[in-house]
Length: 134
Image (cartoon, rainbow, N blue to C red):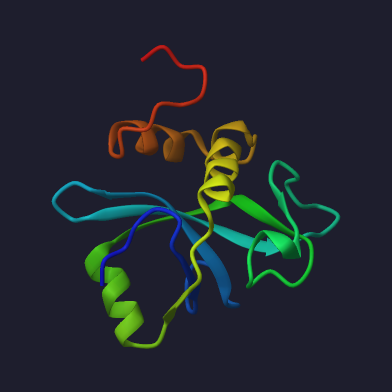
């Protein structure tokens, strides 16, 4: 299965115990065909408000949702294919280009994105952070 930025997956058995929708931000990169993804979760009082999504933003979203930039996942194409085959990852509709750009911008703007993930985006995926002169 070809995966590209903007693709989404309902991931079961991921870093959090309940299924959540994940959005592929960048990839594939390197010999392992690595991807970087972020998790969407229900808007709560303690949520990161960097990128709030509404039901009109994506067919899967039924109520106000946020991107959880503290929950980032690096996975390989092989691992994703295994999870799909096992029924642990279920492809959903991709996000559109405008929403993908909003989510990517939030990745760099959020105070909850770990510096290690930002560094990985830059070094492994060749991403230029907004406003950088690299």
